[in-house]
Length: 114
Image 1 (cartoon, rainbow, N blue to C red):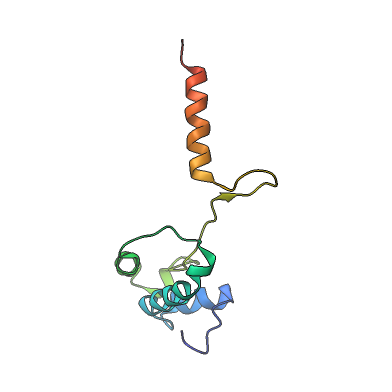
Image 2 (cartoon, helix red, strand yellow):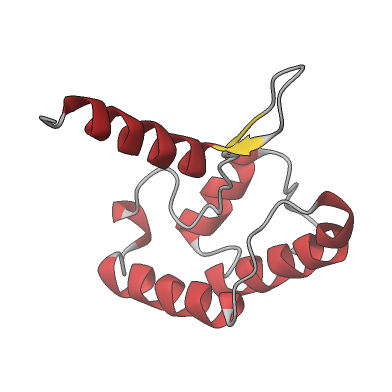
């Protein structure tokens, strides 16, 4: 990443991406490299084939959608992660998606006429 840009400073990072001072593709490649080095310990991401290709394709689509830097939205190109785990003492850690699916299935069963 451009050494003049602090990746932990969201305001600075988003401004650099919007203005094109930090090329979006470079940011994605560098961020994925950083993540891949730490993922074996963290275990935070679901496996995905061709993650980099997918993100680079989406970046290209984003650049085509917002070709003028001054028209780019505030969080243009910012990569985010959403933690979908519930961890409660005394219970197994459960992915929210799985929990919600099971909850809704149980609720449907109760709502359906017998």
